[in-house]
Image (cartoon, rainbow, N blue to C red; front, side, top):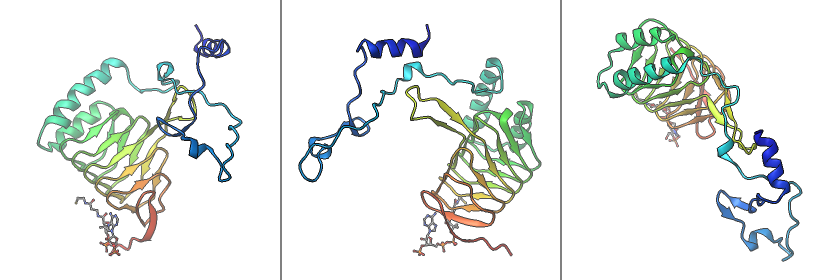
Length: 231
Ligand SMILES: CC(C)(COP(=O)(O)OP(=O)(O)OC[C@H]1O[C@@H](n2cnc3c(N)ncnc32)[C@H](O)[C@@H]1OP(=O)(O)O)[C@@H](O)C(=O)NCCC(=O)NCCS
């Protein structure tokens, strides 16, 4: 049965209660919050909001880019070689990534416990460093130029969700890191972000928008603090 139609029918019949007015997640708005300064009750908002219903979530038209057997095989191989193995063994990792469809350049160093979601959606240039425990959540294409350093525990996140839709639809967008970029330890880079050539995202920063070439960016959200001068 069509979920949307069934949901509308249930709403018409009053089976689904409208959600409580909330101040923040899971917290009902208190009386004092819902009253105006004059002591009068604030008017109810015009738009009625549906509750999130994750039971109706589907990934929509999201293309995983590989069949279930290949993906399962990758999960096992990556668990053993990338997650559990305490050594870099970069040459072996490069060969395995290429076998799974990644485009990997020369002299790419891959430290232990690097997490790569889909190697078949990964392009890496030459002389790139991937630090310990960095997570390349590449549901979409992740393109990394040459001479890029991704430090420990950086998280490159190509996925999000449509929180304005009751079914919390999946949103995926690519990420691009141009040549010479440095992503400091513990950074977060969001979907559809491009870091221009030689940009620096300082440790622990959060990039939700494009970073200009040669800029040094810091904070959450990351802002330009100065220009990178390379001698
Ligand atoms: C880019 C970086 C090297 C600092 O560059 P810098 O230009 O030399 O900056 P400074 O050290 O002179 O710091 C300038 C100011 O920014 C602050 N600062 C430095 N790094 C910061 C960060 N990541 N977040 C917030 N503030 C930071 C400093 O405390 C200093 O503050 P002040 O002006 O109030 O004294 C550093 O921010 C960084 O991100 N390093 C990454 C480390 C890393 O990821 N290592 C991986 C393993 S090797």
